Length: 169
Image 1 (cartoon, helix red, strand yellow):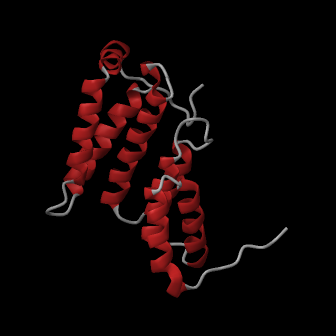
Image 2 (spheres, one colour; image 1 turned 60 degrees about the vertical axis):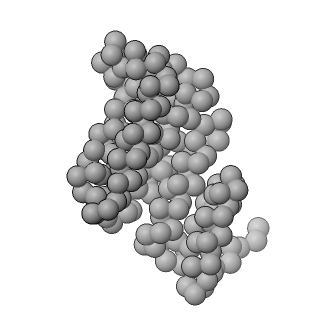
């Protein structure tokens, strides 16, 4: 089998740009591969870790084999507490949306919605001045709930337990 070839440190900015482009083209596996190449050269590269986390969440649903555990493994490598809280919420939010899109029963998602909202609230408290990203995601979650009344009803009747494993049945 052929060996992976390393990239140079000087190539990292260009590689990050390519990874972002692949995400925008809805090719998250390509973005993931580039991020892994960057991280092989600089294991603590924060932008590459964020891009990898996003590429992982882009792959949620439709039998991709990616689950919250994949993204959470990357999340633990982020140094900034605000970013850890913000991206923790994003992982939950994207997982919920993927599950609902794939036809999961609302009872499988309720705990994840509440966790996302809680993470965004914590991120908002830590956000630097002028950064309302956590507020924007909070509002997106609330609007998602408004468009999915079955999910809201399930949250009210079930106590919002949700599922606890990475990949629901």
